[in-house]
Length: 64
Image (cartoon, rainbow, N blue to C red):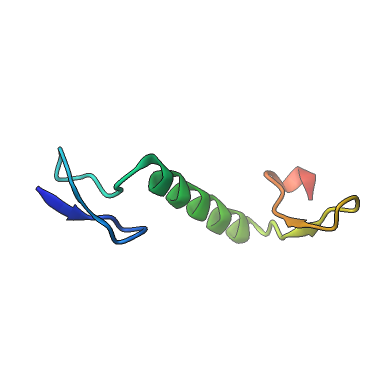
């Protein structure tokens, strides 16, 4: 069965009809996106690292 990846749009051969991602990279990208959205819902905002200056999202509310 030919399916279209919901992340990158690439068509791929799926073994099961429920498969949504063409690769582990796309699966992980989806997980990161869902995790980021979950953090926004909980009120976890991006922070700036005092050492390097890069922005990041803390993994827990306790870290913010």
